[in-house]
Image (cartoon, rainbow, N blue to C red; front, side, top):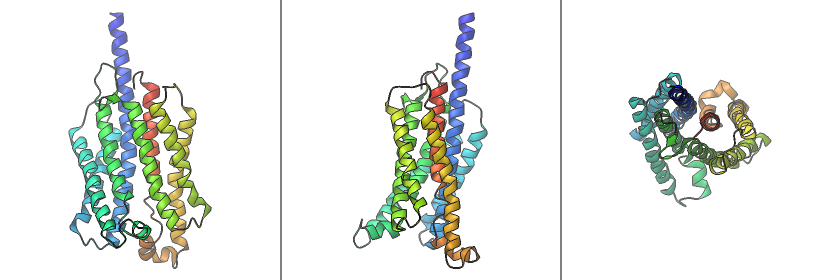
Length: 288
């Protein structure tokens, strides 16, 4: 009887760890979806929605935001089929959108020339909605782990998989920031921050995914919180960049379209929070 009680207690503890990790992933995915929703609304409005497909990321990212917001409050250790369907649709939308944006860039004279990468359809934008879908899908998979205690994601240790996914996502987001800040000639020293802090966070997460398991990765957690805070500070810096344009916020209709994108920096925050969810799962779950 005592052994059965101990097994039940361990099962409840591991299930709680996976649910907490899933809710953390929902938070990260929701931030990415919100970033995509606002950014695509601005960019596609600037493009006059000349292709009806340009409405798609607005609809899908809105659904993703709503479903992930629901997931952050859900304490049940079971897959929610509506959330899972929306997450899969979000990831598929990101892949299709990447194809559209790549076509937009390569059809121009010079194809993958710097000029086209600077001013063509941004390749990083559909990658963000793809990541939102992947994190949402991972949240549902982690939440639904069986009671035997092993936390798995597509057959592999969930904590390590989530750390690797978050790390790769941070590298991709850094590449997009580097491209746009290079276009801006790094005129403000603060513009080096999103191309220096996140790659270190990504390296720490990839080390977590591949290196032997350690009970407490305090330095990685600290760096991820620093990266998350940088995402919030980035909104303030971009807001200041809009303020410095001719007319400032009095001419917001023009300057929001042409200035630094306000919704972009929170993508770093969302991925950093997903990485923190992975670390928490590794710390709380005996087999993640």
